[in-house]
Length: 235
Ligand code: ATP
Image 1: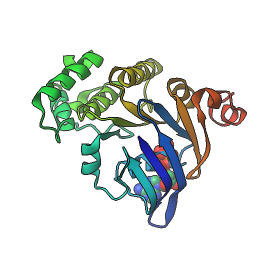
Image 2: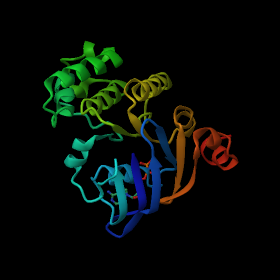
Image 3: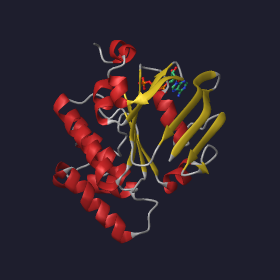
């Protein structure tokens, strides 16, 4: 479904991604783990067109997207939930959700997806008229995921959904990630520093160090890989 082929991305002369190649198949949950500054967020930004690669190629459903504008990429079916949520703080929960469906015209489908996200996260239904900025961190993460789902993505990009949240909320978010994947066969690309949780929910994983992919394997194998255990699982 998604293929990165020798992608190189820069910020000015900072070389953030070096020859990154990856494959994500439809229906999979794939995780990218790595330390602070490894290049995980940049990988998502390159896929969504916000920080386009300087060289290399990215294909989504066999279509080249490495030169495409971010709004066009969203319209093809890729939605990103950014690190730190970035919901609209002065808009209500419902208005935030409407913004997620901004590029859609199918009213019936939008209504269906609205009902789906409010069922996934009933707390958002309770807070529907509250402004986004007054929600707790966990609720804002739920809203950010729901807003992305309102675009009805085929591929959902999640950047550090566990960041700064209490363990009980993190567990709930990860249960929902699995549910989104099974309910609509939504493919999920999950960037996480919490390698343990990420590898438990994922089918496949990549490890990134200093802008390069250093390991690629099934999540099960990565969980028992000695290097991964020492460097990322604290074992
Ligand atoms: P984190 O977990 O801290 O978000 P990360 O693995 O997502 O880390 P990136 O944010 O992709 O890493 O950063 C990769 C490299 O690019 C780092 O060296 C970082 O300092 C640099 N970088 C990221 N964003 C910018 C920017 N806007 N301008 C310049 N350099 C940047």
